[in-house]
Structure formats: C-alpha cells, structure tokens
Length: 347
Image 1 (cartoon, one colour):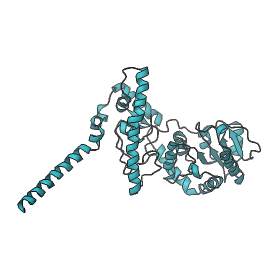
Image 2 (image 1 turned 135 degrees about the vertical axis):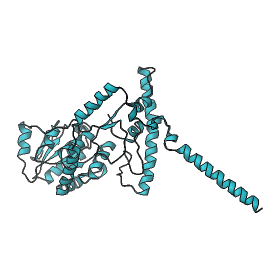
Image 3 (image 1 turned 180 degrees about the horizontal axis):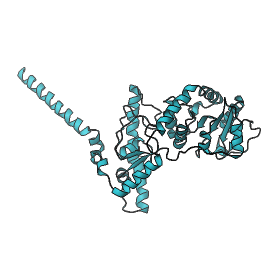
Image 4 (image 1 turned 45 degrees about the vertical axis):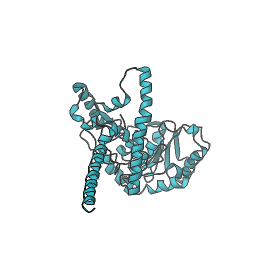
C-alpha cells in the first residue's frame, strides 16, 4: 500500500503529467504557472532518477543478500497485480490512473465511541461556542526531544486563548504551571475526539491517516507539517479551503493564534463538510472494498486486462523520445534536401 507518488505511479504506469500534477515535496498545487511547471518537470525527472538509480539498487542489494535469485525490486514493483493507494480517490488532486490501482484510504476510519473518564469530563465541560481543539503529532514527534521554543509556542497559545479548551497529545516531561484549559496525555483516542460534537479544530502534523481522519469526521484542520509528506497532505486540505497550513519556518505563537482564530470562520467548516460528504459517499466501506480486491486477485491470480502496453516500454519509448527524434530527423532531412535543391538550381 502506498500513496500515489511519482514513483509508485511510474511503477503501475498511471500517467503523471508534470504539467498539472505536482511532484511530492515541491509544495505546489495543480494550478501551476510556467515557472512552476518547469520546476515541476525537473522535480519529476529527478524523482524518477533517484528512485530508479539510487533507491531500487540498494533494495536489490538487500534482496540478493537474503534471497539470492529473487526478482529485482523494479520487476516486483512493476508486476504487482494490484496497487492499493492509502488515500480516498478524491483526496488527491484529480489525476488519471490504471485499472489495477485501488483507493482504500480511510479503511481504518470509524464512528466515534464514548470517551469516558477524565478526558470525557474535560471536553464536555467546554463551552458550546469555543468547544475544544485537538492537537496531535502521531508517532512522528517525540516531545521529550522537542526544542523548548516549540513547547513554549504551544503554552503561550493556550494562555492567549483561555476560553478555548485544548486536548494535547504530549509525551514529554511534566509541565509546571500547565494552563487549566489544557488536557495532556501521551496517547489519545483521536477518532473518538474528532467525532465529538464539541471538537472544533484539529491541529495536526500532517500524517496521512491523521489528515484523512480529520476529513472523515469533518473537522477543519490546521497543519503544522513535520515532514515533506505531511506538507503535501495538509496542502490538499488547505487548497480546498478546508484548513490552513503553517510552514515549519513560520510557526510561532502569533501564526498559531491567528490560524486558530481564522479557522473559526464558518467557511472552513462548510468546505470540510463538503469534503467529508464526498469522501464518505461511496457504496461500500474501504475495508470491504480492499477485502474484495484481495480476494479477487486470489481467485484470478493475474489480471492482464488491467495492464497497459506501457509495461513493455522503456522511459524513452514511454515519452516518445525515439519517435520525436525520428520525426525531427526526417524534417531536418527534408529541409536539408530542399535547401540543397534550391541552392543547386540558383548556383
């Protein structure tokens, strides 16, 4: 299971035109200027080169060490009978894909259950107007190693918004003088909190599952991405007007407070509810959809009708480089011949 990155799309031969599909890590959307398209094309070629000539050979070395004679990583990747993509079909920017690609993102999503205990009492004591804000960082961040500056930004933000309650996934050292409007816990039942009627905002690190859960539960998201992938995920939310993105370099108390105030504008909630409705409006659950296709492959073993002739083409053939070179050569020959004839006649 993968995201539909440039490399995985190349493996399953799903077209990824860099003219409008942003390459992961470029921080671009599908609305590209000439300069951005040029940069995106260079990033596309760079991503393919790194994957084919740097990443896969290292994987092959490990394979051959432990499983001598096994097929190359490229062949295994290219010959997969099915490719599960870990996001809903409309989560990413609109793109073409092959029949053997199936979107199953959100298969872990579920309705909220009762919270119970101190956590339940804390969130239900939130006033109806402000509700509570959920802050999570998944397993990416370790607060015991986080800079004090980052912790201080959050603590100063909590103090600046005393009427708002914050539920913070925090596993660092105990904090002295923790504001009374903050509940900290090293692990949180994220979906139960997102599905709570008083959850107003999700401040997320941008993890794929985390962002998809926000969409599935219809909670506007403020992304403070810690990784390139996290930035791309949050960008897909903010580009639809369902959330905001704070780049790591711009993260401060003022930017976070500003974002928390701005996202209370009802337009963000409305856009997120539209997004949620489209993600959930399918005639199946992602889990049953994934299970069906696993069993389908088990029954039929191979699905040649889901493959395209692109599987047999190298990179020069795929992009018609050989054809373009041939046609340019023919044109050059024709013009050279015409020039030679004219020059001979008028000599």
